Amino acid sequence: SPVGRPESTGDENISAIRVGNYKLIDYYDSGDKELFDLEADPNETKNLISLEKDKANVLYNELAGWKNGVNAIHKKAKK
Image (tube, rainbow, N blue to C red):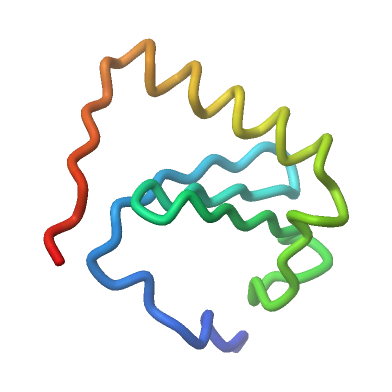
């Protein structure tokens, strides 16, 4: 069976969206983002965020629109 991601996301505030083969993860507290092609990389080992900026922007805008539509509330993680 495939090995899962080596690092846990822990207690971070994140949002994610999957469209087709692509998955975007938005780390709210740090502002970091990750983009994966799940067909080519099912274990999420190669972050494509710097290589596929247009795709990342499309997914991020779709995620942001959905969060606005459901009035999602973000609270900063306690440090």
